[in-house]
Length: 408
Image 1 (cartoon, rainbow, N blue to C red):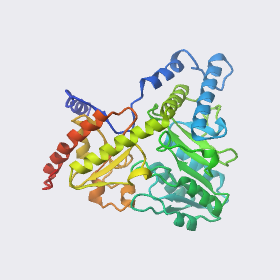
Image 2: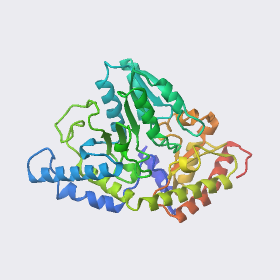
Image 3: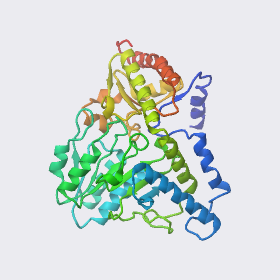
Image 4: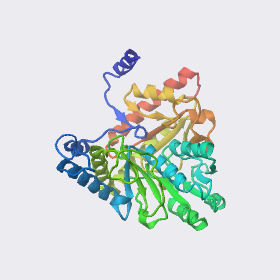
């Protein structure tokens, strides 16, 4: 197996350019973020932040300052409303399971959108199968926008939790999340409202203290921070229980010794993302549109998945290439130095279409040829031009292999 991987890597030798667009699954970490983290591995704040000595106090100070910074970027009123977790998956587990444990005797109904991230989807299924909760899925239209009227219909006195991602990670749909939270609280003030904001953080602004949102998930690597770090915003007085037991930490809802270097890295990545924010978002939108328009105009039989324009996340590109097998296309592109993913990051190894693409009406063969790409502030026009140069040839080669008569 190792030998096979070595051969695959060797096949990439001599690439004239490499463009990494698979930010949905992982990301490179900029040098500024690495430099911010390094002291906390070796010379400063390497102690347990819950202990009373200099290395512990240094760690505690770093964590609190990082929480203050992130709280400011999302409009949280208090840095103690930020709970650091090992990633967005863990934050979603804390949000949903922690709420369900708290309100288990108050109601047995959970509402989610039908295009929620897999971690939310699977937790809802677990609560239904193991604990008797009823899960109601809110439908979406062909662009992935939730049906607010249906949301209003289904939320009632039995509804414990509503979870709707502010930005869909796969097709980039920006939901009317503030309006959704208002509807939920009007229907039942006791219902907890959670949003996975991982794909919105650093790309769209939000003032959580000015909304009815109780819980919000954040991700580090999706803003070019270190992997293995996320956070859950928990509005003050929101009733939620911790879901893990262990060593006492400085955080109320997540036990164990905090990962100070990664928390510092998350805060530094946040700082870089929000510095000259409007300029950076405009850069993302321009590269996104250049990539979308270039691919759709150069290659026949293509479908843009998700909305056009302002309702789409500024970094998201998801296109189905008909008569192509998505996984084969990712390999072909990789050999040319362009790194992308096929379909949902969490389901791509299964022989089934993405539940998100199915929900917006894509047929199996349309979903099967989908390619997901995300641009970052580090990408350049030259990067996108290179992608547009090699992509048509890669599609043509895959279509030729499968016997398609469609020309690029």
